[in-house]
Length: 110
Length: 288
Image (tube, rainbow over all chains, first blue to last red; front, side):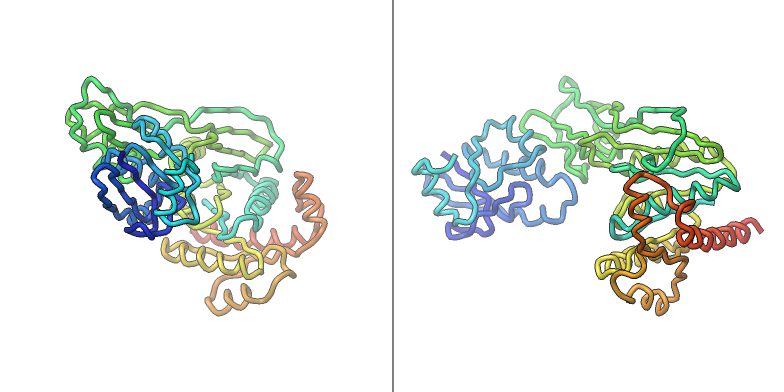
C-alpha cells in the first residue's frame, strides 16, 4: 500500500497539515518497500484560486492507495479525487505523521 | 460622468450613500445607479420602481470533447487558475474557477475544448422617474465576479450613451472586482468610518486609487465614533474630505427599514449637498 500524508515537514516527526489543497508537503510512504519520500507543495500558498484541483492532480501522479489528511479536501479537490479512487482518511490533525500512521494502522482513523 | 462609491472596509455605507445620492440627484436630472457589488447586491432594497428588463448573463467556459483529445496536456499547462486539470486519460474542467480567457481552447491543437456559454447570473433594470437602476446578481456558487461586472458595464455603456450621471455602488475591498468597477470612472468616493479598522482599510483603498491614478475624495460615515486618525490622515495627505455623515440613531433606524434618509434627516441631506456641489464642479469642469 502506498500512503500519502499532508504534512508541514518532510519526515515522520513532521506535524500533520490539516489542509489538503494548500498543504505544505506530501509525505509519501510505500509500505511494501518501506520507503519514505516527500513532495514540497509550498508554492500552492500563493495560488489565489484552484489550489485544490492542482494539489489533487499532483497527488494523483504519486498513484497512492490512501490519503491521510486533516479537514478533508474541499469541493473542487474532492471532485478530482473522486475520479481517482484514492481512499481518503480525515481527522488526522494535531499529531505527527508517525502518530497518524500508527492510528491509521490501529483503525482509529477513518 | 461616472462616479464610483467604494471603500476598503465593508459595511461603511457604500449602499446608503449610493442610493441616497442617486435618488436625491434624480430630483434634478437623469441618474443611472448601478449596483456592481454583484456578489451581494443590496441597493435594490432601498429603491422602488418597476422592473422592466431581466436578462440572464453568461460566461464562456471550455467543454472537453473526449473523442478529439490526444491528452497532450497543453490545456492544463496554460491555465493559470487550475480550472483545467488532466487526470490520467481524462480532462476535468472547473467552470467556477475559469476566467474565460480562451487560452486552453485556442491553444488546443485538436480543437477538443470548444467554449460554450454557462449562466453566471442575471441583470435587472428598473426605473423610477429619473432614476434608472441596474442590478447584477451572481448565481450562488459562482466564484468570478469580474466577468459579470464587465458585462454589466458594457450594458450600461450601450444603453445610456452620452454624459448622464452614473453612480456605481462598488464591492468592498481592494481586489479585482473593485479595480474593474473603478478603472474607468471619472471620480471615486471612498467612504469610511473613523475607527482603527476603517482607517486601516481606507489607507489600502487610497493606495489603490493612487496606483490607478484616479481622482478621489473621502466621506466619513458615523462621524463621532472612533478617533481623529482619518481626519488627520486626509489633512496630511491633502485628500479632499467631501462630507461627514453624523452617527445618528435616526439614520440607522431608517436603514433598517429599507428607507432613504435624505428626506427625513436634514443633517444627512446637508452632507449630500456638499458632495453634489463637489461632483457638479467636476462635471462642469470636465465639460468645459
